[in-house]
Image (tube, rainbow, N blue to C red; front, side):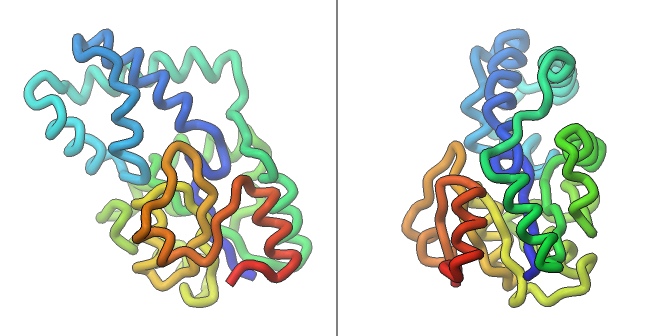
Length: 217
């Protein structure tokens, strides 16, 4: 069993923290609460995210200020809280490892933050490959990140499940030739996504049960 995991919103409940951080940053930049931009940028890397912000706010958007205020909020938050782990993560990781499965991470988040969150949650050692948004040229929904994750694992995409919560991530996995499995977080699937996924579950514990019972296509 080969499984590639997205990170934000899939393994960790960090997208809700991002909403709070961008509300904070937007108010200090004079843009008002901007947490809604998280939904507009789900699954995208830093370069694509900046492009979407520029389209939304034009000249009022200043990338350096957004980075500064976002980091300020998150540093204070994570100084007092551990990264919030999604239900079923540890159970699913153990289930896959016990069966000799190969696992990788394919996250649009920069590598430094991905590795920090994985170590903080105590799950870094489960993964044989990590591909991050600052390690690739093209953002999700382009398939590059999933193609590279499968290459690092030494497996074929057609033999690999991709666990995702966002539209961009699911399209990326599907276009790479992986089998997309959705665990919704902030966004619910539309008809296009429902046609391409091989399973949809409320949490990672349900994914583990579905694997165990052979209910995932």
